Image (cartoon, rainbow, N blue to C red; front, top):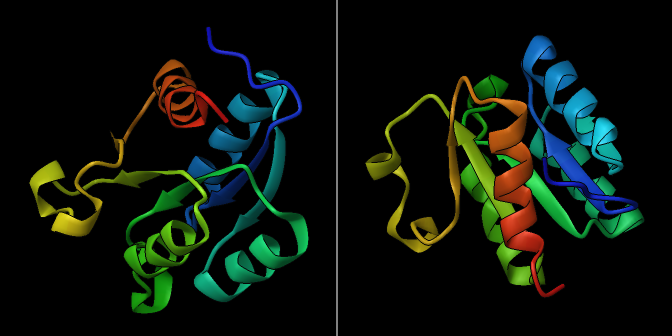
Length: 122
């Protein structure tokens, strides 16, 4: 299993059960979890205050917010991220098609492998 000792990972997820699962998996791997944030505004505040090394971003957030908007902000700052969605991978906008996509429901090993991959070389 991939380990992420001390890596600061932003968790953006609005579903409480999924959020708790992801947070536990990340903490078990040694990561420092920033959040979870259930929306774009709190996620942006965490980005500014905590400087994450990578992020897990839910694509569809409550209130009609799009995780793709947050993905754009992360990309502009050079912060690697993984998208999580119940949608099809082909539904990801072309600008983010090179980004790893976790299909919900995902497993802890899948989550850690995807984040480990985006963190390689950082």
